Length: 192
Length: 154
Ligand SMILES: [Zn+2]
Ligand SMILES: [Zn+2]
Image 1 (cartoon, rainbow over the protein chains, first blue to last red):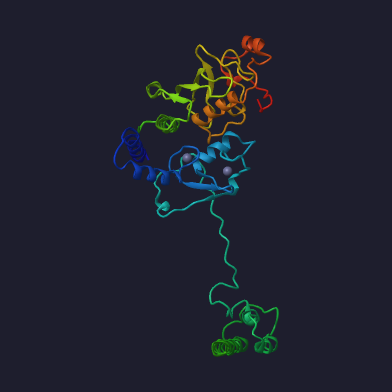
Image 2 (image 1 turned 90 degrees about the horizontal axis):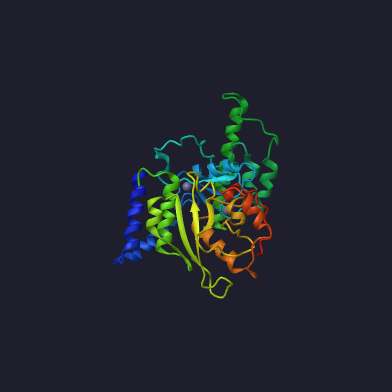
């Protein structure tokens, strides 16, 4: 941290004092850098978080501000309401190997991961698993409406039957049939 | 630079940008601030076309080591204290961003600009109505005053 600070200072002091020939490019670089500066310490944000209103901070900086004014938690930049729960951490490449411990500051709030809709995950359109046949063939070309309704067995379908039982074998057989139907369906789509 | 506290680092950055690109009417002597980063004197000039045109004032900024979480202590100092309904004759300024509405995203520059716009929008040069009493009784530190903010339009 200290060394990077020294660097920035050197750079800005040289570009400040000098009518150097490459001062233009330096200015542009500086502008780019300041895009990712924390709104509190004015350094490049470390352990960066962004508020719902879109303002960037170091997590330690923002945390300290929220602690300073516990009864009145507002964004330092735009005064929008802000809270610990509602900031989003930013993970850049290499952010995992940050060696500086986060001292007294609690760990950054975790990112909220919304799982993708299981129906659309994986083998799209042909989930023979939990979602069954009905769903997969629901994509609708009308000649298959027939199959969907007739072959849609056991609506509240229990989990897979134990291995080796008759039901298990039947289910496997049916899966294969459905798979073939699916292949035929695709084929039909391609030919149509 | 390595031994600097976070507040000094931020002040160093602010100083450099203020020296490099001062807003119109604002100037800072870089040497004064470099001797002690926690104590700045800033010169401001009354804007053209306002009641303070041609006047010069000095603002003193004192920072604690909790800056920028803690607001700076800002007062007018020197010979010329502007005559303004929100400026007491001892230099104390009644301005909400200096206490209740302070935010760490504000800066020396933004405080200077707020004060200049406060001066610029003044329609009649006069001291606050409670000036005599306040100056006699107040704490030396304006941040200790429980300000009751007047209308912000003036
Ligand atoms: Zn920061
Ligand atoms: Zn904001």
